[in-house]
Image 1: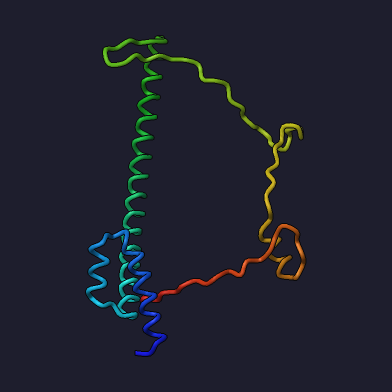
Image 2 (image 1 turned 120 degrees about the horizontal axis):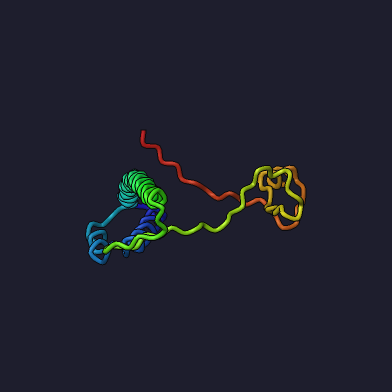
Length: 163
């Protein structure tokens, strides 16, 4: 084994040990006992990455399902509230005291309805000011100097092909 490869393996083992601290001391001890090589360490990390991505996909799916369930119950609750309001209105009752709760009708606060936004006077228009990053990027690529802006070096990204 050459010196560079040994140094790389030592660095990887140190990095793995640091990442395994979350898993606990048993995981670190296991990795050390097994004498993980550089390639084994990389394979181990790729496997862990794949498992995490599968878990994320499952969680995202479950979150979508729960959001849909939440929305159904929210819609059902709103319909039930509307039914109660309608019943009280038809019975001409503003308040009904029950053993479990008290129902009462009250006026909603006034809200603004905008019929034609373009017809509003300027004093009632709020303008959001934000940088146009696409225009700034194009100008910087053309070599223009823009105070307060610069192009980043972009960094590096890792691509993993599994197919």
